[in-house]
Image (cartoon, rainbow over all chains, first blue to last red; front, side):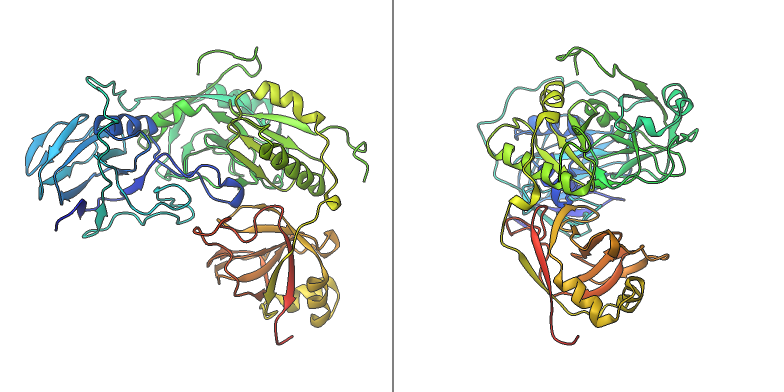
Length: 298
Length: 214
C-alpha cells in the first residue's frame, strides 16, 4: 500500500467522512450534513495545516484504527480518547507525525461521544454537491468506513499553516445547557409546556443520532392538535413529535417537516450537543425573544 | 386573485439567523418563493444561504440582519404565478401503479379517465422534501386530493409516480413510502453531477404523458 492514502484497519461502530457540510441545497431536499462538533474540526484542521473546511473522520463511541500509506501529519481531537501510534501512546489534541506504514489507533472516547481525526491534506474523496460529508439521512457522500477501505488524502498546502499552540479544548459537558430562541411554533403549545421546557430537566436518549438529539423527560403538551403543512427546518430546531418529547435537529436533519418547532438552539451550543452521551442532563434556557438589533454576543 | 384578501404575510423568527414567511395558501407561497429567487439573483438577499419553499411557507436561512429583513418582507409584492412562463419538463409514465384502480374509484371515474385527468393537468414543483430530489407537485387541485395509504409500503421502487393529499410526487430512489402509486417512469430524477441535481426542482413546470399501455 503506497501513495497518499490511509487504509481502514478497524472502522469502529460508525466512522464517517465529514467536512463543514453541504450548504445551499436544502430546497432540493438535501440535508446540510457535515461534522457535528464543528469547533473541534476547525481546530484540528488548523493543527495539521489545513483550511478549516477540509474533510476529517468523525468516530462514534469506540474510535477507529488506520494505517498510513505515506508520511502524514494527523491530529485527534473532539471527544478525549487514548491515541497510539504503532502501539506506543501518542498525544491527543495536537499534531502527530506518522511515517509510511504507521498504525494509528484512536481509542474509545473516555468522555464525550465523537472523536475526530484530521490528516494533513484532508480526506480527498470525491465531493458530492460541494461536500465530502456522509449524510446518513439521505445517503449522499461516501459510505461509512469499512475495514480494508482506502481513503485518498489531498495534497498538503504549505501556505495555510498558522501557529496553534495550547489550543482550548472545552471538555464534553456534564450537563448540556442549550440556549434557545422560542418559536416559530411556540404558539402551538400550552403555556405550561413552555414553562416545562424552560424549567425542567431532560436527558439525552439512547435513540439520538446524527439526525437528532432525542430527549427523555416531561412531554410538551400541545395547544393546537394535528400537523402543520410541511415547512422548512433549520439546524438546531427543537421539533416536538406527537409523543411530546423534544428532538433537537443535528446536521443530518430532514429539510422539511410537519411537527411544530417550539424553539431553536443557538448554533454555538450544538457542538456540545454532539458530545453529550446518553443520560446527560439537558436544560433549555430561553434567551431574549425580542431586542434591539445587533443584540448581545453570539 | 386579489392579494388584499388576506393582508401581508406573517413573518416568524426561527432562531438567530432564519425567518419563516407564512402565506395564506400554496399559490401565494409559490409566488413568494419566485420573488425571493428573483431578489436573490439581483443580489438583494445578502448572506441568505438557503431559500426553502414548503406547502405554505418560505424559509430564509443565514440571514445577516433578521430584524431588518423581517420588517421588509411584508412589503414584497410578488408577481402572480400565471404571469411567469417556462418550458415544462415532460415525464413519460407507464400508468401501471398498483393503487391506480383505487385512486380512480376515489375520484369516481374509470381508470382510463383517471389517466386522462393526470396527463391533462399542468403541474408545478411547489417544494422538495422527504428525500433529495423528491418534489411535491401541485396542479391536480383539491378535488382530486387522496389520502395516504393506511399502511405505508416498506419499499416503493425508484421512479414510482404517486399521489398524496393534493400532491403528485416521483420517488427518486427506492424508499419506504405511504403515497398511492399510480405509475412508473424511467426518467432520472436525481443526479448530483447534473445542474440542478434535481430534475424536479422547486418552480419547475411539469407534464406527465402516458407511455404505451393504457
